[in-house]
Length: 94
Image (cartoon, rainbow, N blue to C red; front, side):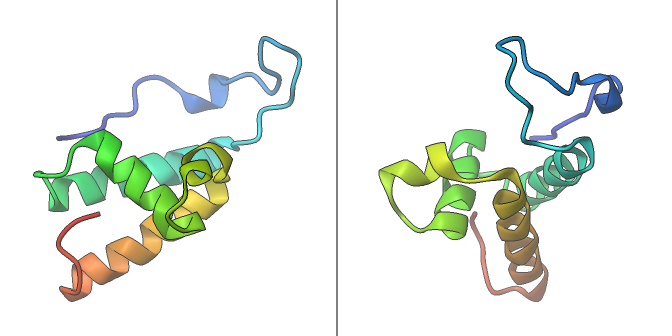
């Protein structure tokens, strides 16, 4: 599976349609999507939903709340650490 960034992420508005500030920065979003793409390429047998939930668990621990509460920068750090492990041959799935 390949994740492709379509369009210019800088065009994302600073405020959501409900008036709340958007927490994810454009640079964090780009880095996170690139990391997810690389993990996905390295682990093609892992579905995208599984990958995202597993990254949330790596970032926050295995709890129901992890997926809902995890911050974008936490996901990025978890993805980067997981990529390090994949590159070193220490992990085969997300």
